[in-house]
Length: 281
Image (tube, rainbow, N blue to C red; front, side):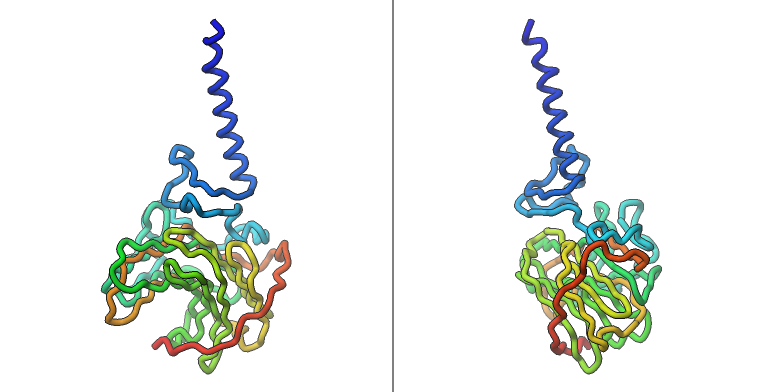
């Protein structure tokens, strides 16, 4: 008869362990292992088993920016009509993610939202790159803000993050007149399929870059604070006439916040590095 009580005890213990694990994930901490499919988590959204992820993964939560004024979680239905895509390549939603696909023959593939624009505020997105073959050069991915008017071939862009799959550094920049830019270069693991979160805060007196919820640079020089009106864009950029690897740039979500709430933590950080950039045209 004692054996009749073993199964309920073991079952209760298993349920307790699962509940504890779910509570720990929601409360914070880090994880090196991907959750099981049975936990209700889409496997496309989780990191590789050896990637350490610290929760929460977004600066909006850490710095308490409040409720986004605009955003797309890519969870319901197909691609919204406010996403404008380039003639080349393909843009769609895939497993709850905005997916920008460049095949080996595409020079540039873009997706930009035309339903939101702002001079000041905060922008954030969770991004990754996946390559489906190893034939040819690698595309460079850009998460950037572009002006709503007078584009000037990228001379007014702000880059939150730019990198190729397997790069050792992610870069970003704000471009200023006469082909000058203030840029950053941060060492990090940019492995195949790994998610990272990049954010920016633009105000009248500073621009601050965030990587995986951490402040990395705050730029206050006057020529960087140009007050343009921006909208978000994601881009895969190749070299014209070259063969490239088929690449997917995927965004788990993208959000825009206003400045109504002050940052809950300090944004004090070193300025960007001054340099030049090549004419993108």
